[in-house]
Image 1: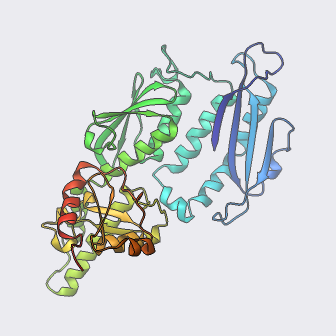
Image 2: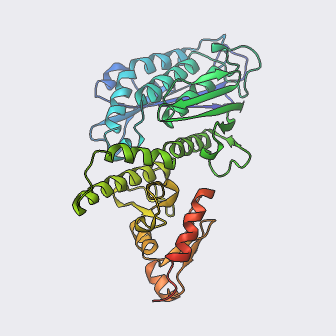
Image 3: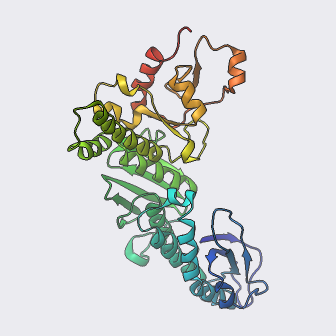
Amino acid sequence: MTCRVGPTSTQESGSNSPSTRVYLRLLLAGADCLSKLALPVSGVAEIQEMDYSTVGARHWCYEGWFDAGTDAVVTAGRALVAEHVAALRTNHHAFLNLACQTPTGKLRQKPNFARFHSEALYEYASAVALGAPQRTTVATGATAGGNGVNPLVRIRIEKAAADSGFELAVSWSDATATLRSVQFPESVSVRCISSDVFVVSASNPAILPQMAEAGAVEVPGWSALYDVLGKTAATARTLPDRVAQQFIQQTARLPQSTEAERWVVQRVGQDLFRRALLDYWQGRCCVTGLAVEGLLRASHIKPWAKCDSVEERLDVFNGLLLAPHIDALFDGGWISFSDEGCLLTAATLTPEVSAILGLRDDWIVRDLKPAHRRYLTFHRLHCLRRSG
């Protein structure tokens, strides 16, 4: 479900105030959705069949639109779209259940996904459809819930929190939301500057993205907020001591007296390390952006055999999530990266060979943190080929 609000030059009859055009869009499954509504309704709504290839059943998209006008004017179009949204809730849930079974959907599954992706946004859409004020700044007076924030903005922030891995209830103080998770002890605060500008801070600034040099980061726009919250939660979940603790717990009772038994223990660690890197890098190659999980490689920067401790072996900052061709070059010492993430090539790799291999000068690892540097230094000094 998406809700888009924008200005329009038209006005519905009976209102002398400038109108706000509202678009509500729901993805649906279940053929009964077509019989629930008398569609198309000219100038108000329509349903079209969709063709997302990964969704293994017929599915449709409903879109309704209207000029919101003012709260005092309950327009026929707005009321009709509100009825449609209510009637189609179960079909929207049916689509979500299908979508979450796809390879991409499984990557997006989070606790309370249906509640926050469907229910909270349904509440938001219903509030818009029923005429909640479309303010563009944080409210200065009391509002619903007593938190000093436009209730529609509040709902969207709570949904962003849940989608990004903060599954516990959001607490509010004036214009600041505090986000928490059962998966890590750190909390994250989102302070509303306006309806689409935020300041994000954390109880442990180390979990914030690299751009947060002053312990907080100003975030312009909802897409950027999702990106910052997702990266922050992933970093908090995969801090080195947390992955190592999981490893110790899972291997405490495993025998390690033979080579085969030690290999089993090592495999547990490597699986945990891979899952941590998939989480940290958001399921994408940190150089190319490739998002096919089965092709991605969890590459140690300082090799497993040369690590001095379990903590080093399972340190998420000692790893890069790489496409297979880049992993082969990096693991073999043919390429490395600077502290800024820029590509470095072995002295023995000629320009002709580099061209055949498809090496590109614009390959760069983005969003590196200071904790990556000591491992990258080791790789450049001890793994990058000097000869042969």
